[in-house]
Length: 344
Image 1 (cartoon, rainbow, N blue to C red):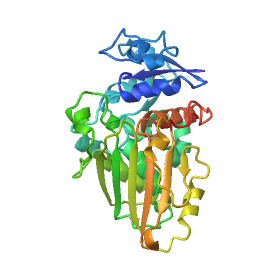
Image 2: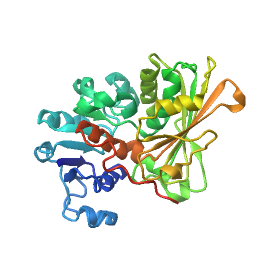
Image 3: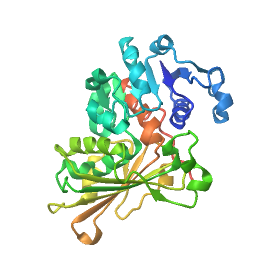
Image 4: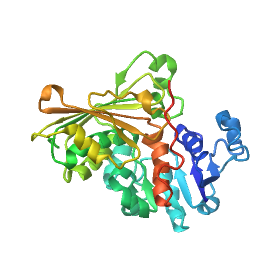
């Protein structure tokens, strides 16, 4: 049994961590922090957790208490982990950061996209990008994990087999992606109000989105060189889910694309390659740490279309964070993550 702490427990990813960890056989949540809700019991704020965390209350961040944990999750806005991660690592605690603070390897590029100087550039060389399907062995030994973003997870998993085998033009990739409103966080924002987001769909960040450099960095790792990517996210009137429609231009005759995808992910517990001709739905991954993929070649032409769906709060955030925890501590990779999706 290990003890974990959660910094920033009142947002959607924080409560999703609690929900998933409640069924983890080898983890006990020792501390959960919130400056604004210190003293409030978790089960009072989140009645769905009654009977699981009745004695646990939010507290002010205390690095000594957090440092006594085996691992600490950061479910916080960008910039927060910069200020605390180094001190926790120095105390021997492993850090799993769900924010964007350590995803980009270049501190200057991070500053460009996030509008402030990087607060802990000295830690970047120690951070491992936590996409298990690409960096599983490095994750096992890591002390600092940068959990991938939701859009980057869906896009990278969908394009990975094609880039690794050099079948598509890496310089001209397109990712047309849709997200539910929880991707914007739990804070009160006018665009996320029911009357604003319901019965409507819109693109945003078409000229440049913060996830773009992260996606490019990960795809370059898969391709073994630089890539060119057009990435356009959209807000859709649903609570959870990411749907990524991905396009690549074939440069050689690819053979059996279905078999390629099935081979690449045959040993991956959280990637499901669906049968030929499938069109995966976001509701099929609601509440679970699974990416469902389908690959198409319309008209046997030179374009490959990959459909990739995940739950943005699970495989796109908290579930993937726990998958990393399991690898880091030698647990079964499925621990706490084996429940089926919610339907309807």
